Image (cartoon, rainbow, N blue to C red):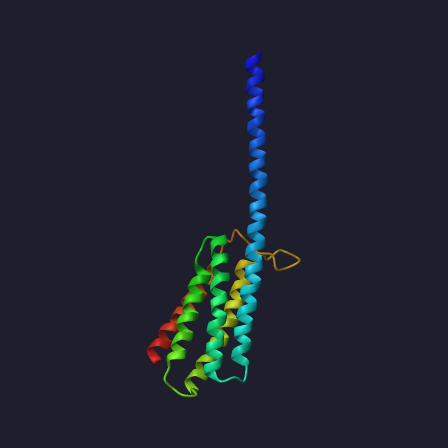
Length: 176
């Protein structure tokens, strides 16, 4: 009789512990979802700011310097999102953009018709990136929109984008 009660109490404690673990797991997932969602919003907003810079009437050198400053923020947002998701894709993209803007900065032309041409191409790259992020990192069936997806099954668009920016970077390096 005492054994049966002890076993029942043991199962009860194990059940309570398992329920507690499930609750903690859900709370942690919710925090990660909020953190990833907020950083995705900041990431897209900062890429929008770079896109707007590229559309501005500023000199190419000022655009490049300001874009590189904004890329430092992107580094942090990308790191947080990649950690939450468990992949390094956004950091890879950040590094590619950093390489591109560093090369632009180091080009020895004064005003730079080439720079302006490259900046126009970079605008297109940023627009494509924003589309890829929206289609990959956000839940598609969420009616409110803007809900981050933690368990992403298809990274095809991001993988294709990384190939595209890598190709652009190589071609740009060969030209300059």
